[in-house]
Length: 426
Image (cartoon, rainbow, N blue to C red; front, side, top):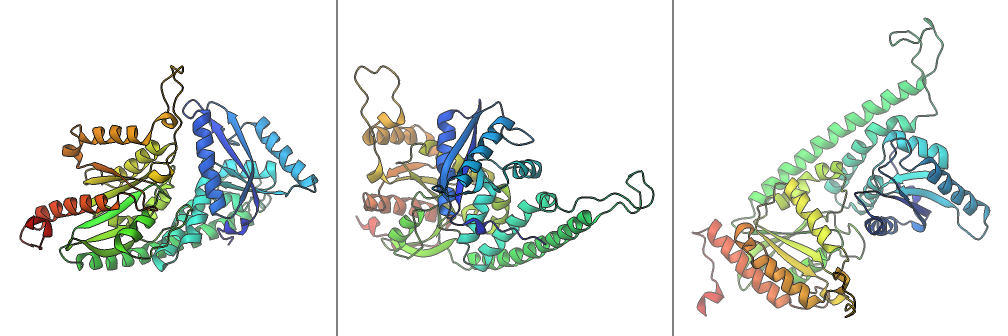
């Protein structure tokens, strides 16, 4: 059986492809391709060219139009012929491709074809360290590969001949080796999926028991978009050594640490980051890991305020949390990386509405503070604070805010389990 291996594409040059549609303008497509390039870099590839096309929607046959596909093919051919350029090893598309689209695109371009989902799966496979994370990634890979098996065996087409001639479904002798191999692979993958589900169910049961044995402590979970600084903040608050790196999905395995602020103990968990178009198979496969988020008493939503589109990242995370059933969990929004925030004052003669790039950090802080104070806090339990984990700016204020939130939740959840609160002595 052919194995699902994308990581062999390491150190290859890549071309990115995205669409500009009525629902996704040119600026948004550029931002998505920037993120796709970051994903490719994280996976070990080097991006050399981008292609975009304005269309009503993706082609069901080749994703982009035939003319654009020929343009990409011509560029690949020119790179092959030019001794100064490295040959293009793969073309990465910014959306998930169907088996039919992949088959047709590969036939035309004659290079390795990846989509956003397979690239994310490849990175997850690279990052997985524990047995649980490896099983979760393998399960997601098999789920992704199952409907695409036919593409892997196009060299073994259904063969004609045999008795009966006509080619009807019941005709004997028309089932060629392609279908036989396809069915064999399907059985192997389905069997493997069953085994992985059983293994993950056992791990989930063990983790559920572990969570029950943690005692009467409030659980706090760090959530947020990938690469916003959750692990750095985790290390800073809990004085631990969680792996942190300026790459996407640096953390896959949930890390839980017991910590205390002013003698008030609680559990702090660092969780896997979210991303746009996160494959549904990954969300399902990482169910046991995300149980730390589901069972948290308080969510600390970390946001990279220096990112040009941090508000959409907030929406992506909130949507994912809603899908996990955590929409009503009390949440503290921590705007991180204030040290990296940049803005340009708008010209006095410029009468157009200011963009995010024209708003100062102080004005942004006032806006969000006001938004959190407009009754939202009472209905959703949301508050916000602005910090820099790297520069340790405003960390003491964050600790105080965390203390107050955890203490409030502890009194509500465990009214008869008292701790000594130093602040009560003031």
